[in-house]
Amino acid sequence: NSFWGRTAASPMAVLDDAGYLAADLFATKVTNGKYASTIDNGKTAKNRYRVDHVFTSRDVRIAEFEVRLASKPPSDHHPMFATLSLVG
Image (tube, rainbow, N blue to C red; front, side, top):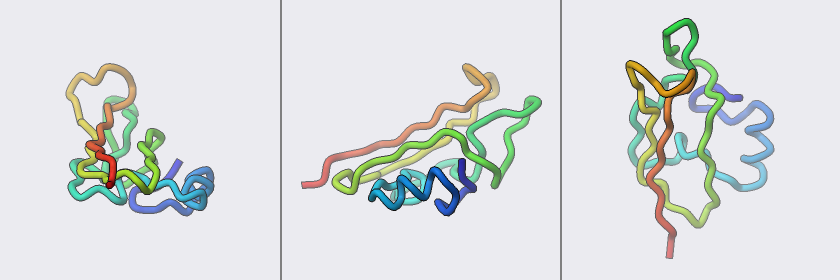
């Protein structure tokens, strides 16, 4: 798990050290990026843990990242989306 804007906590650090990019930190456009991906007692926290992630290799361009906040999400997690394209 990690806090928004940081990859300092394991296992995030392991993926970061291996060269993978967290889409929410490297996307050109971020929507709802400060929100947690989970719902606790019907509420979504800001600047809290995100337990769901999208990681890419460095040969992928990350155009957009979004935590899609839904009034009635499909589970106890909000959907997350990333728009990616291959570089080169």
